[in-house]
Amino acid sequence: MKVLGNKSLLNENLALILNSSQSKTPCGDDPWVKQTSLATSRLANLGHVLITSLGLATWEIQVQQTARWRGRQIIICPDSEGAECDEIFRRIVVEFGLSADEAAMIFLKPGEKSRSPKGNWQMRDEAAMARANKIYPVSIRPGGKLERMLKLEANLDKLDMTFALKYQKALVQPPHYDIAEVQLEYPVWNYLTHWTRTQHGPWPGQTRHDYYSKLVVSGNSYPNNAFATLLNIVEEKRIRASSEKIRDSYPAIGFTECSPADSLKMLRWCPKRVNWNFEPYGIAIARDAAEKLGVRPVVYGTDGDYKKFSEPDKPYFQSRGGDNVDWSREREWRHIGDIDLGQLPMDRMRLIAWREPEAAFLRGRTEIPVMAFRN
Image (cartoon, rainbow, N blue to C red):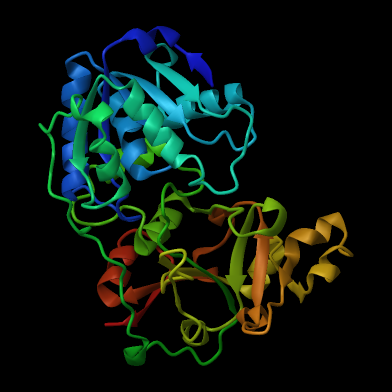
């Protein structure tokens, strides 16, 4: 174990707010979000040092809210991802807008990277409960792991049910898209389209402080849904690259040369990701204009082919797939790094929304022409 930051906090009166795992798309009106925010503000204002952590919204919302109320906290880092502890602590201080004097960070296994992000979660939960002087359950799943841990003799005398709620289903559920009623037709499609989808957590370039600040006041909608992601691109005038699902973590932006109607035929729900592979919200750039920006078609091949690629070409490699899938039908193009949309004339782009009311909303925010799949 390693401790950085204000180590004297470990000797203070330590409070622990607990939630079971919740939806990947929480909103401000979710009871657990409201109650966790309330508990954090009250305990911080009473002078308690809160035990918080990273890796799940149920923990990270406490990090942000404690910082908001200028409270003090001890952050348990369950996985250092093989990075230097000092680097992680500095990054978290910046990401959440913390004061280094009001925070300490405990590294359970400094320098080690677990095989799975969940690998050290139980160790984190056990360490948090062992250090706490008081434990405040909020939304605990009946029959779940945390409920069983709270019933252990060592924890019973620490329990305070002041903020406890009945565990409830999330308000925001995944959207359904009925592609059978799509009306959008475009006879000739000479564009490359970047489709958005719901982002679980902050967008590329968005701090966790900003993400959670918006989440707690988001009402009954998830703040980083697919439509909000497209709106963010319009307002920033930038498409931000991401290394997610890209071999060797090159920061890239994916496009398809498929028409919107053909793209919709590939729309599918991904149970493991609890998300769509993409959603019917996108920004399209005229192909010739995109090529001038450096957007290139990917080269489909096998793992053996990848080893033969030169370093400059490796970001444009994409596996063809296996027996049950052929990724080449996506006809993908890529740009490495962000794209500044301010370089492009408005009439060289198109925005695509699922419904006409969303398209009308976008038209009030930009001069880029907007289309909708459905009324």
